[in-house]
Image 1 (cartoon, helix red, strand yellow):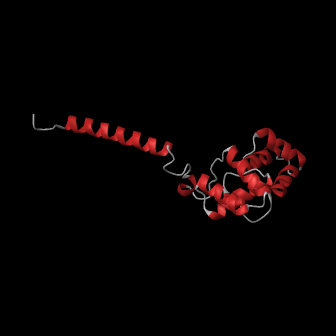
Image 2 (cartoon, rainbow, N blue to C red):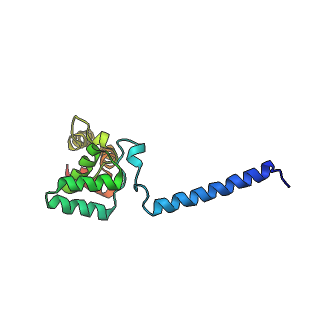
Image 3 (cartoon, one colour):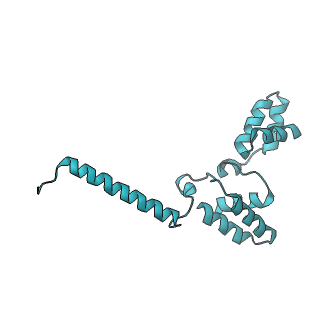
Length: 149
């Protein structure tokens, strides 16, 4: 009974893995780590921001407390300073958040100009697709935006 075979080792590893997974989930649920590590793993990607956080950012913006609002966004999302500032200003201004800060910070023609060009060329469907891709709007909102231009 003193020797341990490969089957017992596999079972032991599975049990240890399950215990480690349970501990990891318990620590994470208790707030042991930041909620979103998306920005760390995918630079330039804007993670989803919960409505209570957006509301808090709007309140701080209304009180001219921009730095505190940026800190709230950074704490909740894990974004870097530049991206958090962009997101914070967008929330305060009531703009739609694009899915990527890299695309949003590009220089060149603004979204309205590009949509206008597509509409004039008779490519309305592509204009709607462009608006949805850069702003995160749903189809109905994008169609309304394209219709206004």
